[in-house]
Length: 106
Image 1: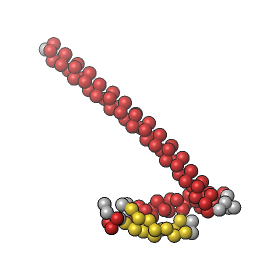
Image 2 (image 1 turned 135 degrees about the vertical axis):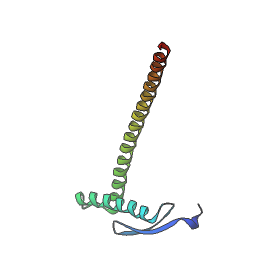
Image 3 (image 1 turned 30 degrees about the horizontal axis):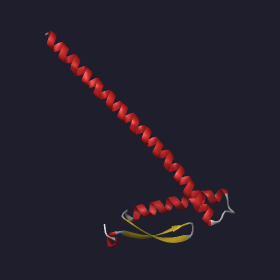
Image 4 (image 1 turned 30 degrees about the vertical axis):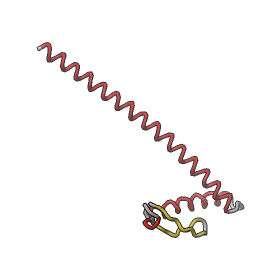
């Protein structure tokens, strides 16, 4: 996608305005900016003396932690689904073999 077709949106994060430009919809970019703003405000509520840069770094660390935890959970779920799928395939094959044996007896 060329730069001319990218969405642009002005967002406010912790009292500062930023122009975001990307392939995502403007509503998606606003949602992301709102999430970052919320994280910074949550941290600031518990640490009112932190400057904006430190708040931004702490928010980034918190979001990175969330991301990695969710990614690990996702990978575990994929493994469980693959295991369940394999077991279902094996069960179906076993049932098919049983049906063939029963048919051969008749």
